Image 1 (cartoon, rainbow, N blue to C red):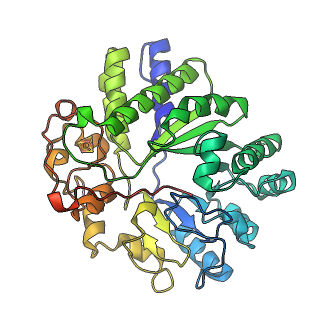
Image 2: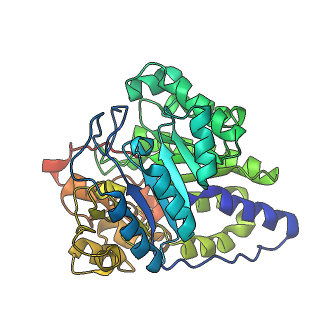
Length: 403
Ligand code: SF4
């Protein structure tokens, strides 16, 4: 995750005081774990990476198994759990899991489609002590209901935001941009304020695109650049106003270098200081500081890697699986620098971006270390030339996103 607002708040403070603020980051020992506790969902969204449906799935972790894994995660230094699905609110023991998470001192987030949250459910969520609830919105009403394949889904999710806000739960919008909903982004950013949400999570489509050359003419890359400019502008306005509204992005770590370019253009005095901060952030964290456990207990480098199984928590503790670099992909993901190739290897921003989201390269070319085809920076901006894609897989495309 790229915390746009965090860096723009620091920039605003630097502008106001004349010096970059001292920042003390808490060093986490273990990764943030995104945990798909259940695959069942009351919706069947077009873009769901879990391919969920409204029926039970056999073999999911029992409550006692979940508790045992939580104990291991705590001992391993995992700071945060993001409870997801499917639709996590369909898991009958979700609130027992949340209570245990709170007892163990995890920062606990809930990732939900929001359609099951009425006023009583919002009260339960508040009493359970969730630190944050993220609700997915794919666009305005017509777009969202089409994506979610349910008339009224938008209104229900919007109502959920209101119910949660009324009982003091921090709530944010989660939005994944595609060619089909990019036009709704400005209105969604306005809606965030109207409905009292305080966080906007912009997820890039984790796709493998049409080609790997001519980035400057690629419509999707141009749309991404425009969207990021818009997010930066909103986050900058909020930072200057002293607002605590958060704008964050995910699934494209080129956002870091792109913010650096934005700073060079608007606040050149602080470019070097920001570069140091971004190098300290370190870019893509899959297989390092972000982990995923699926509903059956299988561990993956992150949620986009469900096709790569690192092992089951039923067979070995998560802590052992996560530290095992006998898996070639995990060895590469944990390496610093990663063994990336092509223009990522020659990129002047590699120390910031860490080679971006490797699953796109793997899906498009079969080679997880090929340069990221989803990078929207031009060759002249990264200081390295693009490599033509292997022709046989040039047309392959995946579209996956969070619940
Ligand atoms: S070229 Fe590669 S390393 Fe450089 S910013 Fe793009 S994705 Fe990141």
